[in-house]
Length: 141
Image (cartoon, rainbow, N blue to C red; front, side, top):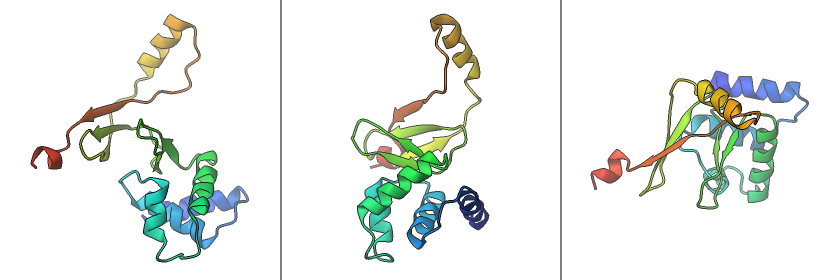
């Protein structure tokens, strides 16, 4: 995991981004977290180490990481964005009871994208697929 963090930090530095302790901590938290946290969850997790850090600092850093292509913002119907530092092609499954989000891989849907372009005349820039269900933990309650 440390090499992923270091690679990400090097990438930011090469783009002229200053690496503050807070920025380092936010990026590390995202790269180590598989829970797709909200900005508030990131803030609460880091606040004990950075008592002077504001929620706005977290949002501003997330915005910069999104613009740098290092983080994806996941928006769902509950009005709270979640953040994912895994920018590889993958999909999400969301528990309808507890809201847990898990990643899963599936072969590329490029054939679907090409068909959509053919049928609509659009130029497809990407797609998002999410599945909904009940996680194993909630099923066993």
